[in-house]
Structure formats: C-alpha cells, structure tokens
Image 1 (cartoon, rainbow, N blue to C red):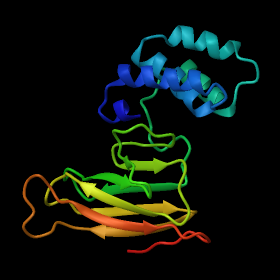
Image 2: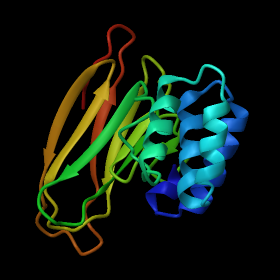
Image 3: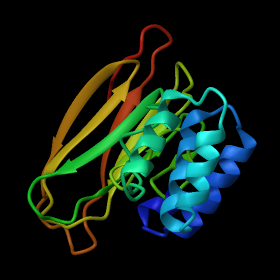
Image 4: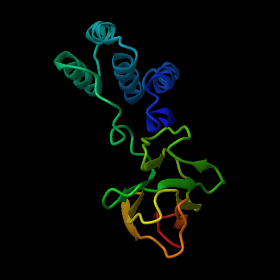
Length: 193
C-alpha cells in the first residue's frame, strides 16, 4: 500500500501480487492484485479471463469482474479493505497540504502510510490489523502546511474519537508535529492522553 500512497502503481502491483500469493484465501489482497494487474500492467483481458474462470468467486471478486467488464480498472481506494483493530484518519479543511498520520504502537513499531500494513492504509489513513490490549498507542501528525486545519479521527474497539487540530503559532514551513495518545485498556478499549 505504501507505493499506492506515492502513486507508483507498478511497484504497488508487485506488492499486491506477492501479498495475494502469500495469502491465497485473502479476498481483499486477491482483488487488489487483479485490479492493479488490469490497471497498472495493462493485463485487463487476462484478468477478465482469470476472474471468469474462478470457481465460487467472492463477492469482492464478482464486483471487480463487473467493474472490469464495464470499463477500465479503478484506482486504489483506501476506504476498501479490512478496517483493522485501530485506525487513525486525517482530514483537512480547504486546500491546505494536509499532515500525515503516524502511529507508534505499544511495542514501539512505527506505522505510516509508507510502511507495510495488513489493514487499509492511504495518504491520510493508517490502520493496524492487531493491537495489544493494555498498550499505549500514539498518533502523530507530521508534515503538511503550517496553516493546515482539520481533524484526526482515531477508531479503536468500535469507538471513534475526533480530535480537531489547527495551525499553531510559530510553525515553520516544514509543518507541525502534533500528537495524540490512545491507551488501550484490557477491558474495554479506552482513550486517554
């Protein structure tokens, strides 16, 4: 997904194809591998043939088949795919260059739109497939225009928290760094600072 974020569809396709080969029962990865082959590699006729030949295709693959039969393959959509156990999403107001979400996990792993993930990720979204209960997760916003305003939505355990942000006085052109902490309690999930 990292290559999708920087619009390098050919490299992204190599990753989708490898992921689908490693997890052959994962319909989302299979759909993305077929989609990118049709779009980035120009293999739409071959993809159509393969999808039509599949025994008992999933709902996602049937939908992709219908889309490809109707026209060109769609671009990557970061709102599809598994949502994950935790997600941080950034939305900015207006045309300002928006900040990028980065999540530091309870064990210190850093996740961003440019790092591999097993859940949906995009330019303004980071999702984690697994979380550690009782751990603390920090969401940072990096880069973007110093004048950027918007909100960060953090979803965990089915609960959403929205945190507005705005330009802070004194930020330089490199953009602000803002943080938000999510503490995942053992039972139930919770939010904290």
